[in-house]
Image (cartoon, rainbow, N blue to C red; front, side, top):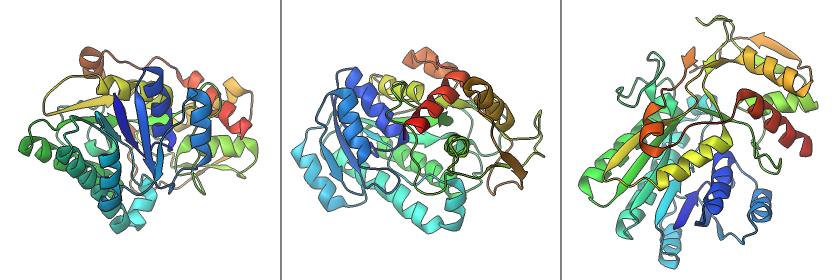
Length: 329
């Protein structure tokens, strides 16, 4: 199949491109480089041994996106493109809503117009809000705690309505949890622009000396050690989940959690990183971050049953591969 990957030079998108080529698919990447780097394209071509068509473009630009769809006959779309920082979304809600909703609407219009039958959407566990874990796909959408999460929930509603109105437009919503790690080659991984918003690149940059210290946001949550608990999943496992979703034949819309089904606290991640990589981290406990919840982990039994997919890699694999990538930068 020929697959359009929006945001294909980002953290999750780039790893998914590798897995798509591993399964024999063709890929076209669209990315505006707002939270990615062009060097990733060169690395992807090195890993895959392929010349990958690339367009530097924001997916909200309907006219230029139309040209791409006329130039290629796509069998599927995997839509990663979107702003993703929880804290930033609180301070820049209009930018988040415009970009995250607009890109989905434009890609959906083009998919329907050009008869692209498969649409995989990069959703998030944030759509569950502050409900009790483990999260299952049949839970109602929760009250999201930040504009980033709300944009994901709104996108899910938009895509649901689109599938009802347009038979033949088939969507898989992938609600994934906290991707960390890197490709085992150490050639691609998480490369945030500026100060990292996610835990693992902050850990690796602190370990390397790029950051003076790691800040742990809150130790007064109702968890075993007081720090936030998340379902961390290796990005390679997550990428393989997207390929499994692409191969899933269904009509209409379907939703899957992609996680490990196990919660790990921030302090447990720090301990694992120090132990596996034999590196000490300088960290400080500070105030909670706006919009964060105490505990989030998945029930992934549906993905195992219907997609034949489950996470294989461990926390130790995640922290080892993330550090291997950082050291090679």
